[in-house]
Image (cartoon, rainbow, N blue to C red; front, side, top):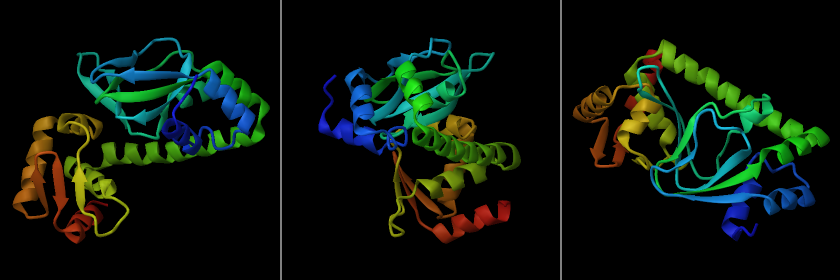
Length: 230
């Protein structure tokens, strides 16, 4: 299918495709599907057959599971440029283990899973690239387990705020691209607790909150809170 230059650039930069030869990349693009999703529209549901792996081109996707009592647990928030569902393919899974829904209007590229798997089997470089991606995600997941099991809600929120800062050290303003209750679920914090922590940090003049904008007023003090918890 025909993808625009922006989407092709996003795909080229994805770890999924960096090790591909030009002809392999073009072959995958030729059979790719472009999904244009409205806010709240599902890309796939938990238990659906795994036919494609995905790269988010624009917008945000939410991956979540439902608890036995019907509560929603956000597993991940997928930003533009990020891939998802490839770990399931790499592990030999046949079904998607989560739901995927657009948090905002989104454009997602679907790559034929069987075709990509065949390329993995025929390319050592591609396999090593995938292993590197999986290793980085495994490291991230181990850190995530530590945060969720060993640290309190304030620590999880503060470390998230610090990580959300842009790479420019002078940039201490965060724009929440997704609703606060989604961020709270992602951090395993109840929405009311999330709001209470934000208010406490605001009263301590560590942050300032204006609608979907959060300004870090005292980064050094926030980093000190993290060091104390560690």
